[in-house]
Amino acid sequence: MATIDGFGYQTIPGSDGTPLHVAVGGTGPAVVLLHGFPQTHYMWREVARRLADDHTVIVPDLRGYGESGKPAEAGPDTYSKRTMGDDVVAVASALGHERFGLIGHDRGALVGVRAALDHPERVPYLGILDVLPTLDTWDVLHGVDAKIAWHLYLMAQPVGLPERMIAAVADDFFASFLDAWDTDGTTFTPEVRRHYIDSSVAAVPSIVADYRASAGIDLDLDRADRATGRRLAMPVGVLSQDWGSQLGFDPRAIWGAWSDDLVYEPIDAGHFMAEEKPDDVAGFIRSLAARARS
Image 1 (cartoon, rainbow, N blue to C red):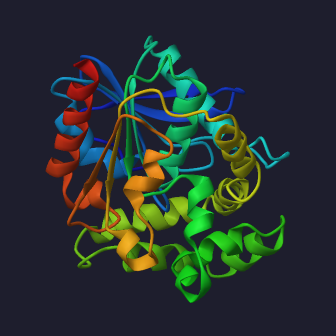
Image 2 (spheres, rainbow, N blue to C red; image 1 turned 90 degrees about the horizontal axis):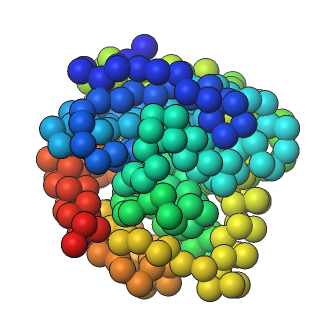
């Protein structure tokens, strides 16, 4: 099991009692860091240690990932981003934090967006790394360019077939994303790369369920918010590669439709920016926290 040096570990019940594996370190205002795919909380190790100088840093494995519980998909709510966001609120509350900054990468950012929409009084600022809102992700994928997100379509299929297909080549499946999205192939040591692959191979049904929710219930939640004009009420920061130039969309405009207090920052890094450029990512988070205080 990969652990963050200097951090303690707890198992904390999520919103429905699902056990969540949580690293906690540092002192000061709380900030929660949520990981992406195909990773675990360990992706935040360098950023978390930097933030721990002046923050209480809370770093969970999302439900369905890493060492956290992986409940069977009993229905659309099991892995909806609303349920996963409620997990985050439950963890923070159990640790004594009624308010906490919230930073998410990739899948974790989608959880963060939903938690911030559903619990604005709990989240003074929201940071998003390298993803678009669920609703907009599907809208920007067109024609042959959509092949960049082929895994979204595979894991959106009904229960059974995608799980069996991925399980048959699980090592290669998960390794392909680590390799394709690593800018120069040096971001991960062999040990870290193996940790992510092994953790994901052990979680195929729950990872697929997480993605399947984003083609179903998560879309419904976003559409309902869009229809009623519900927006993110806190300062929002987005740190991203320039996906828009590749796929023909304006990320500032997309995120601006969800927030009136938005800062968008491009970064010269690959998808795994928290590990590639931890100083830049930690600085981005500190800047966002300072903006919220002012």
